[in-house]
Length: 368
Ligand code: NAD
Image 1: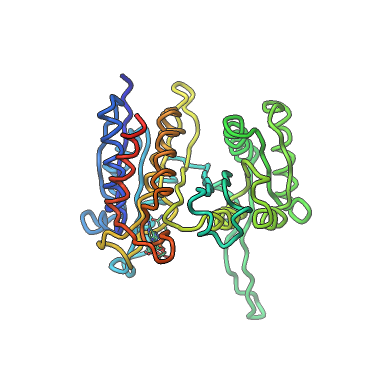
Image 2: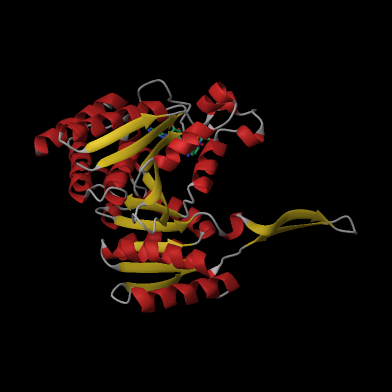
């Protein structure tokens, strides 16, 4: 039996509460004969309290050895004034950097039962299933020079640099095309080639990789501003959208809100393929933060975290049937009306974090 090594990093605030529900799901799959081995470690403020760092070297080497890392959330008012280098987010940034996680995958799925929670009309979002693939380690957030300079006349000049190398665009394009082949076989590549050299370059590289390696996949190019508009006008026209770090940041937040609540949104960050095993380093996390306002109250919606584990089943372990089964269980639980407060229908009774985890396990059981 294959063994899948999972490192759990619950973090702070609601992180440990939603991770506990994932452990129930992992436990259920384990009972059904799947070989999951889990280890747990600290990250964020809790790691700072224990070790004076947002993630310890020991936890980092566990992350390097794991087949996948499941990350809860970090941060909270308690750590707002700790030194910048050891602030809770530094743990996540180190994980992304040291594991080389260059591809951020954010699905936006609108469960029929939640279509009315979206700010858009039901017919626009119901049944929506799109994937935004964002380049995560390059572009304008990291390019140098990045500075504010005072000039001789006393005025100032600020510079950020949008910078991409061939290999950075090639590898994110391959991730997007690969994903599309397993979905509806369409990639929309978003940039601003009308006003940016990096946009011209992005389009050239994506076109070349498409022609050479993925000509069976449909490719369209779209200007990033038009893409934002189209996402709100008729999002179902998209399957996979691939874009750079900055545009991906914005477009994925737009797509996120199509589906209702922050508590529903999973994500994956993937690294390069190991040339021998074909495995990618991977980290799975909900999009939401540590929600200090509801932490410790048992109110958090665990579905984003559980859905993140579902993405690990699909993208790290190739357990597609199990991932589909988990998705169906989540959809059925939502359809039955079992919901936390953030997604409860107006006037309906909301349940707690543990109730949702229990209901999903029960639903998994009922399907088998
Ligand atoms: P947040 O995502 O934690 O919360 C925003 C709002 O959404 C809050 O009202 C919260 O109660 C609600 N919410 C979030 N997740 C929910 C869930 N699963 N179920 C129900 N409601 C949920 O964002 P914030 O308030 O801006 O930040 C709080 C802390 O989290 C800060 O310290 C911030 O730095 C940190 N943060 C961490 C991450 C991360 O770990 N990746 C991401 C964003 C923010």
